Image (cartoon, rainbow, N blue to C red):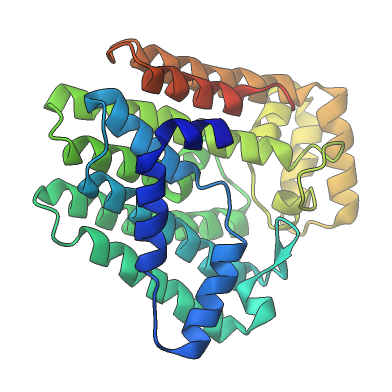
Length: 320
């Protein structure tokens, strides 16, 4: 990640400046809370993809691209704060969440503030497709959460449902940041569509890998495993189990998913190993990565394109 940031150089510095300046406030509590989040930020993958896409298309990042990159990180962080309140999560990646440090009310309000700042950065963009793709993303995020809640209660999630949920909750923001970058450098319709397709496969793969890590207690990923089962979420490893295990096991898992507990987590992990369910998940993940890389072939050869391919490969690393 540091290597990519160094490659981006001034574009990355400009993003950091824009991101920090957008959060400046003369309200002490708001400023203190913002500083806490800035000090415990994540990998900032979405801004990296935003800037790389622009450089891959036109060789440089203008101020519009920088603002889209900052907006993508603001929106992403805002949704995480809201998710933490909805999930009553005390920590995220081993760090106390905003609702823990302050209160659920503060976390919700701060999430709203970051959302508004994200939209502020793009509201005057001359290409109205940028505002549309970000507003669509906000609607997708909410509808994806609602669909996931509905399916969790019924315990009847299909793989099509799953793909729709992860599109709404994860892929839509990757799509927004990369399509907005392409629009910001006045890319052609074909180029914009290539960016959208690349973003689609990257977003799907990213969430699939995250879901697979939840079934990998042997890896140190900074958060407890088995949470998806306890939250009644049927994700890719379970679909692998449904594909490979006897019907009797599938029926039992489906039945017990309506009232999951620690024993079910233990049993499912054992079945996943017994029937090699992760190989099914790996095949699906690898297919998404392969399709993302294939799209890049239509981009001009450049270090930026190489880094986009490496970023895809990073998701595909066989740690699961």
